[in-house]
Length: 300
Image (cartoon, rainbow, N blue to C red; front, side, top):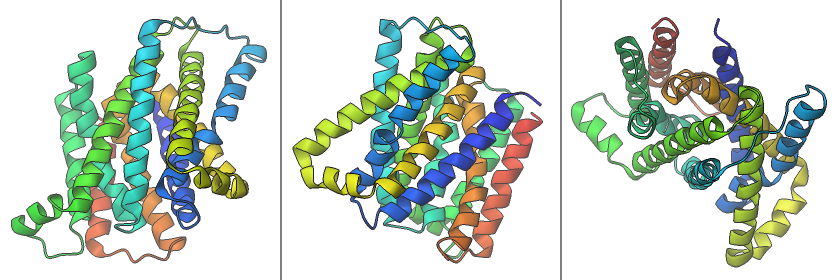
């Protein structure tokens, strides 16, 4: 098994854990505050990760450059706004369906990867990704009778548009992070991914702190008061991001993000057992399509 596969599965699990914790926090924090905690409480861990790789594993620090800085800033800003849209989405629809809408990302990431990096996909991989996206579409309209009219209405709804937009911006972020990591002159993919993560999360923390000081100072106080649960979000986020960054340094973004759709399996489990949200047959069918797409991707 290629190394990027188990790393991606771990990333998907940790991302689902982070999203579940953020949904729980949303009752205590606003959308901006619930989005901030993944960066603000995560960046010290990201910096520590780089230092430990240097001191214990003996990896040298990569040399930073302008290309890296540009891609890191683009990716960091894109991830901030995609996260805000996703957290807002949780208040419009249940946890599982809200996450499902954002999972159109693999197709969008494939398009951005082709345009920005010239990455190409095999016919089998394209077919597997399409199967996965069909699963997402089934989930998006699982609460209404199956028809073309209802499908178009579901995809044109405010919830769907926000989710698809979130997926698009996440796709841009993923491609930018891969570009940033590859732009580094580092000893190996692990150290390059770790340095990218540390720089990006530090930038995101500073950016959002300035934004919150400008828009809502009281939200910063609330973020500090909820440090116990907020720090768990930050820890899950930075560990998940370390896995994402490493996987995307090893493999094309579209493949990594397509396999990452396995997160929806974890999401429906959390939706049912943690949030006691009902899951119907169509949503289960959508999940099966997603799993089929993942299997197809692994055997492309």
